[in-house]
Length: 117
Length: 107
Picture 1: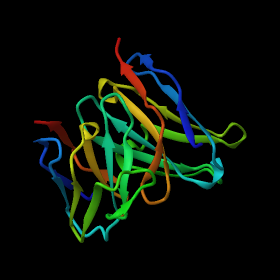
Picture 2 (picture 1 turned 30 degrees about the vertical axis):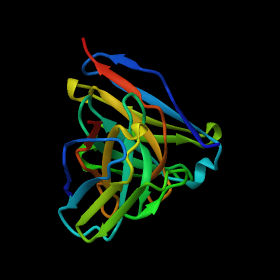
Picture 3 (picture 1 turned 180 degrees about the vertical axis):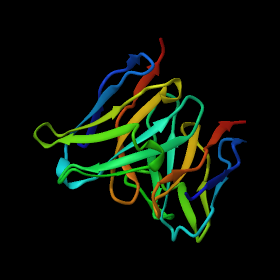
Picture 4 (picture 1 turned 90 degrees about the horizontal axis):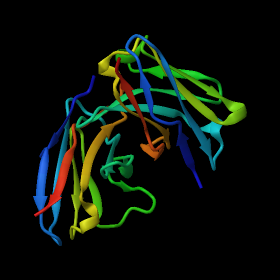
């Protein structure tokens, strides 16, 4: 069965960076776009971008240009998102999700990132 | 960016009732719309794609309709397990955008 297993919660300091992972299993990792979505407490969902692990192509929401960097490792079927120059506005739960391509049919469990000194 | 305006923001309904959630796009999204259910502490789950297609494993009491800029999600015969937040999402244009969500509670 398809599973997206994300890394654990992160507590990081303002100005630092964090890299979170999303390990895929149960399907051909290189054949589907992997998306990343942000959800702040009590808030809605915000699309960050996608990566196509087959060739490394990426597409970002302009709002996250310079903030998020998406990569993928085909050998381990793992997608990564690095967030840089962290501020309190980056404190959120971050999900990875596979695009079917009509909609996100599988989601990771989410990673809570807390930015605090 | 395409704005997705979802209503109502919250909704209280009784077991067995039929509820409808609306989503309006700021421009035509050509039925490139999905609906998700999110229960507290969980990830969102795909309910509907292409505006009216039921995702695998989703109960038939859920249905979607609409076209152009106006879309709706209907839940027939509300069950206790349907208590959740619901989000619409357009995938017609980048950046993909979501509605602000509807929180559904039992009356």
